[in-house]
Image 1 (cartoon, rainbow, N blue to C red):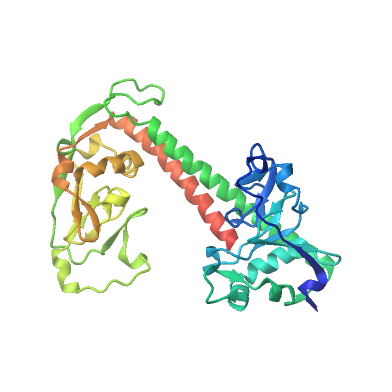
Image 2 (cartoon, rainbow, N blue to C red):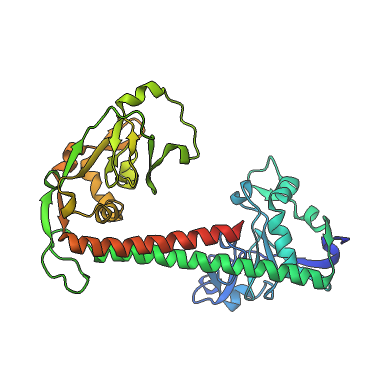
Length: 376
């Protein structure tokens, strides 16, 4: 590969902020105007603010394919944001523009900045200033090792395809999360109503209203020290402590007093207020500080139906009425929860609802894993 200065293979530009006191610079504007808050992904095709032709009159309109770099912003404490313009844009004073020339492929140069992000920030970041910034003058003179134009193009195209796949799975993930939230709102009755907005065909009976204490019972089964220890998590429910990735020192002789948890049980833990009640798929034991409860009549209730409801935003918001203050936040009063009313359909409808949300959860997990895999 050939060694070149960045200034030998690119030209540079910048911009400023049109006077904000003049509304004619902004009202009904359509010209993209990039600020530091817009550079959040590798490619940029929209901006938070658009300016008018008058506002852009003294600015340069940079072509698609140009690179924009944030050179002054608090975000520079953590990362050096760089993106490729997908549409012609202007920029403000916190952005510097890099325009690849001749044998320099813009897509390759973008990937160079992405892959060397931390090193560049350490080398060119300014310290001791009021606002974080980078020394763009030194960046212009930095040395690059560049392959041939053909190889640059191939490298750039390869990573562009990976970026597209990452973006695709992120969008699918985001849409599925929104869909699940919407379906949770529509497939459970609103407060004071006995039927939900949307139901599966064949189910018409009104949902029952019962006190939680009529549906669930608290269990306190101890004396099983040979069972594996379970840890409570906000998003994964109860998991084996050995799979948590964290070492939690404790006296194993105390495990005789740990509470037994069976598959289908729920655990009220110290962080339940932020993440619903932890559902368990496993048999094990957990901290005696936690409360374990299960359905009184397991054949009449789907634990997975209740799992989805207990994780819903609507249910968690409702927990505010049964919480009390503790030293590091909020905790749930189990006794008060047991006096609240819960709505539920027949077990057959519960099973149908839980299958739908299990399926959505599987899809969400799939696209999240694919996005993370491609990002590696």
